[in-house]
Amino acid sequence: MNRSKILLAQEATVVAYSAEALSCYHVISVTTFAQAQRAILDEDIEVFVIGIHFDDSKAIELVRQIRNSHKHFHKPIIIIRVLPSQLAKTLKHSVMAVKKLYDIADYLELEHSADPSQELCEAIDNQLEKSETAA
Image (tube, rainbow, N blue to C red; front, side, top):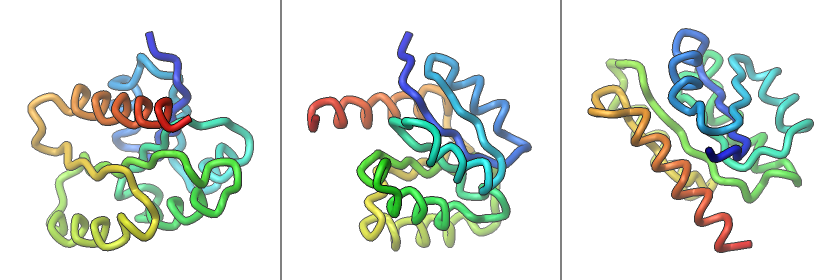
């Protein structure tokens, strides 16, 4: 069992589902921007998983906070979309536009994934492996 500390910042309607999917990690679930800010200050997070719809679409604002944090500026960030959205294409373009600027490790659209839990865990494990080899 991998006990890496993962911050899961996601909208309240799906946070329980995603946290259950990540049960092999030490998951810190937050549903508000204020909770996420506290976790950035107080916790030693290894990977950040942020839902694109997080706290009324504050995902990119949270990415900025992480990158401005001396403690976490180099940690991997994965942005996910699990909810259907009429703006799916626009959301993807927006994330891709800022991906390099904020060094976002990955963007996953899990809405139609055959096994979203597996896909997300593989993405996290991949980032953890990259972090270990870089250290």
